[in-house]
Length: 220
Length: 198
Ligand SMILES: [Zn+2]
Image 1 (cartoon, each protein chain N blue to C red):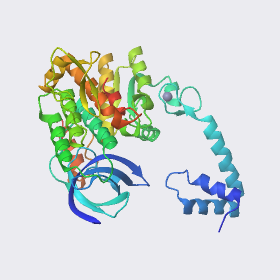
Image 2 (image 1 turned 90 degrees about the vertical axis):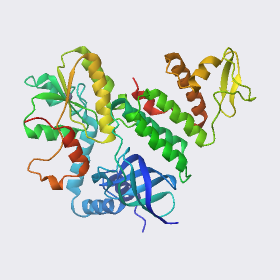
Image 3 (image 1 turned 30 degrees about the horizontal axis):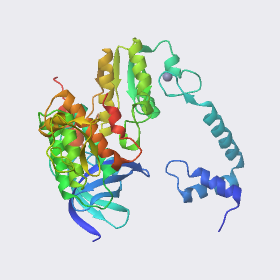
Image 4 (image 1 turned 180 degrees about the vertical axis):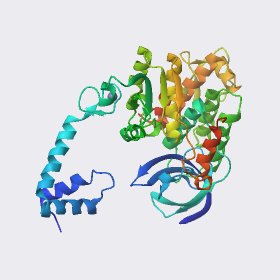
C-alpha cells in the first residue's frame, strides 16, 4: 500500500525542515507511528500536537509525505499542567512505539486519555499512571496489580517488587501489598500515588533505555 | 567531478547556513573565487570576528559584545519590566515598534522535551534567579502559540507565581488592517478566547 485515504492521526512531534516545511512524527490509526514530511507545514497552525486530524499519506520507506489533511473534531484544550501531561504522553509514545507498528487500540486509548486530561475530575497524575499501565498492557508488557507472578492474590501485609518481565514478586524490600492493592482500586491517597509513580517508572525503565524522559523535568 | 580539497571544504562550510544546500553552496564558492576574492576575505574576517566576539548578555541572553547588551546597559530602560521572547529577532521586531521601554529575556528556543530541550537549556534557571532577586515587577510573555510556546509560557507563569511577580501575555489574533475571512481558524479561536470588553 502506498497511499491511505483519510487516515486518522495525531501529531506527536514536529521539527522544522528546510525553509517552511516540517518533519512530523505521526501516530496513525492503521500504520502506527510514522515519520512524514509536511511541505509548507510551518505555515499550518492545525498541524500541531493534540489536534485530532485525518489526511493522506504518500510514499513508502522510513519517511512518508503528508498530503492534504484536516481536523476531525475539536481539539482537547490542554492547558498548564494538563499540557505537560500531553507532552509527557507524546514523549512516552515516541520512545515506546516502533515505526510502522500499528496499534489502533492504543490510539483510541491515547485520545481518551487526552480528553480525560481536560474533562475528567481525576487527578492528572492518576490519569498518567493509567495511561502508562494500559499502554504497556496493549504493547504486550502488562502485569497484574492484584496477583503476583505465581498467580496468588497479593497479600496486604506482604511486600512485593516488580520484575518488569514477569510481574510482582514477593520481596520484603519491595512496595507494600496493601498500597499496591489500593493503587489497583484507583486510590487518591498521596502515599499510594507515590507507589504508583515509582512502580510505573520501574515498569517503563527497561523499555526506555538509558535516556530519561525529559518531560518529567516540567513537573516542578 | 571532484573538487580540490580547499574548494570542497569551502562548499561544505557554506552548507551550514540555513536554507543552503549543496548546489547553492557550490554557486557561492565559485562566485567568490571567480569574481570577489576581496569580498570573500571580508566575509572570512567578519565571520571570525563575530564568532569569537559575540557572546550572550549576562542578564538577558541576547547577543552582546560586552558583559551586557546595549538594552541591558541602557540606564534609561525600565528594569522592572521584562519581556520574554524566544529569539533575538523577536527583540529586534519589538524594538522596531518603538513602544517598549522595558528590558528583555531571550530564551533562544522553547521547551521541547522530545528534543531534549528542558528549562535550563532555555535559561529559565537564570530567569528564576532574577525573579527571586526582586526588582522585576512584571513579566510580559511574547512567546509563540505553538504547543511548545504554550508549555514554555505556563512554566514561566509557575515560576513567577512562586516569586509573586505579575505576568501578562501579549494579545494575539487578527493582524492590524486584516480581514477576518483571511485569518485561519486556529488564530480566530485564540482571538475569540482572548477578547476584551470595549
Ligand atoms: Zn541584555
